[in-house]
Image 1 (cartoon, rainbow, N blue to C red):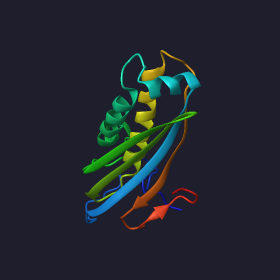
Image 2 (spheres, rainbow, N blue to C red):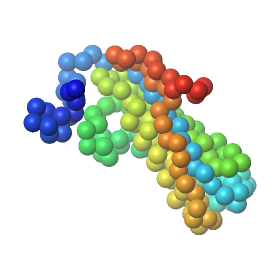
Image 3 (cartoon, one colour):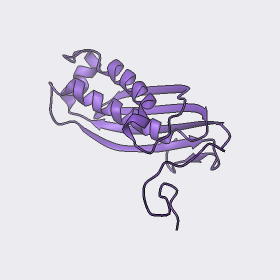
Length: 158
């Protein structure tokens, strides 16, 4: 088996995508921040001491999608042409979904995962004064479109 991110000597390398044609691509990721009932109540009541936690997390997620190559050493610098981060407060925490779009030579799965992860970290940062126990769970790609492999959807995800 050969690995695209290793050279003949087994050293890490960035895959050369120069010859690939840009195509429209998108990826959607989801994750969950499990919280206490007290945090859920504060989020619903707008009573988080640091301010609007959901708005800050949404912006942080969008910003993170654009900064993915700064965090992941072998990720390509691509144009993030669209990024939507949605947060929904549920009875046991916050569901986060990010969809990232591009018209470039490589996909945006890492950008979507980074958006969800940083949005989740931001939720925790915003609510930690209320309770120190929140945890990040189940960050995953649920759908991708475009590129050589076409459309893929995680079984069981709508």
